[in-house]
Amino acid sequence: MRLLLSDHARKRMFERGISLDDISEVVRRGRKWREGDTVHATMRNVEVVYKVLGSDIYVITVYCR
Image (cartoon, rainbow, N blue to C red; front, side):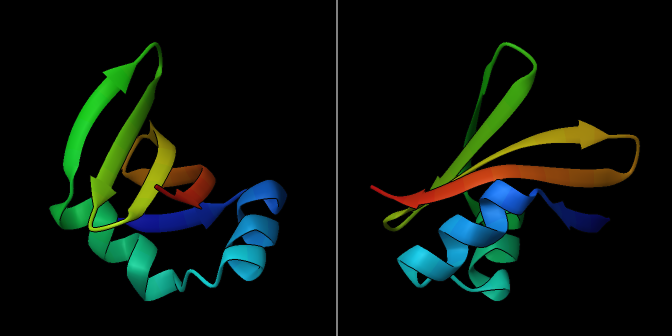
């Protein structure tokens, strides 16, 4: 699994102090649900919104809940 980040997600990571390791952990171990063609994953106070593209994960945005 490769994590691909949108420019928007990179910007939000920086603004919100969320690391790539945080995102990876939330995607792997967080509670998940679908909304349309996106997947939301949350763990502790971090939420990641992403799409599955084959074997890759395309991160759309990340935020603190």
